[in-house]
Image (tube, rainbow, N blue to C red; front, side):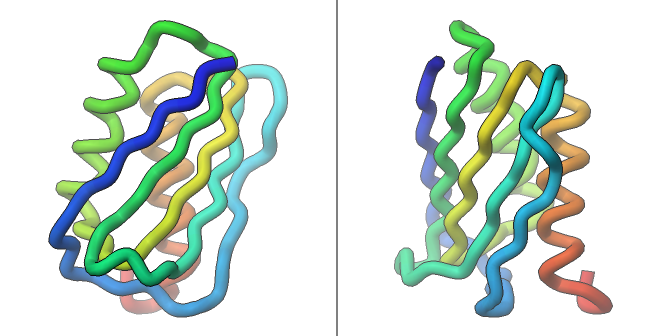
Length: 104
């Protein structure tokens, strides 16, 4: 297992207070836990993955996600069992859309 951590400053979109879990950890999939947290406008992401050595790919996917959503005061935990970058992006978008509801 590898643990990766990313922090993106100066987000502009706050999420509601409730936490959400999206996805299921299993062969080739992942789960995303997303919640509001007092982070001075930042978005902090921690990834625990079974796919060791893909830090550059994870960073690119996380940067793309942050550029798309610009989340502020948000903590995201990802538990991964080998999901592809497309599935990671889909699950992250699904988590934000679930929290935002009609605002998304």
